[in-house]
Image 1 (cartoon, rainbow, N blue to C red):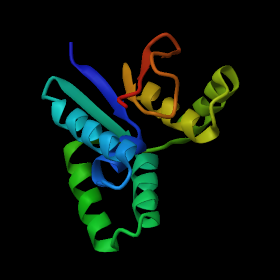
Image 2 (cartoon, helix red, strand yellow):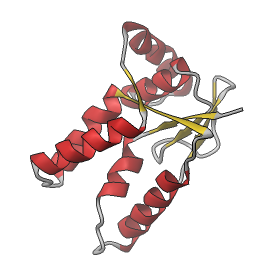
Image 3 (cartoon, rainbow, N blue to C red):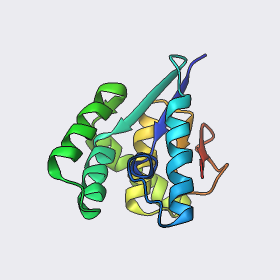
Length: 142
């Protein structure tokens, strides 16, 4: 069975930014790139429109040129499945927020992952190994 994997924004941001001045950030950069290269046709990789928006915003805050962000994001959306945030995603996020006490934004990411049948989510923002609704495992790749 193919894994359905959801990837949170921070993985893509670390993969893009190569900050060699901070050892910890550079190590995260290398790990993020290694993780993204490790996926095969056996994996179905999903992100949401929220991830696209957060990625654009994070790279803008890091003074990346608009053209470079657009080029990177265009390449990214060609390589993964992009799920839209719907009314059901928003409503599902409320139940997740109330049950697990995540931020609204993390709850929205989790709701999208669950809505799309993912069994793994890669993110540094949640507890490594935590199981969400009995089906979605959080994996911190860093």
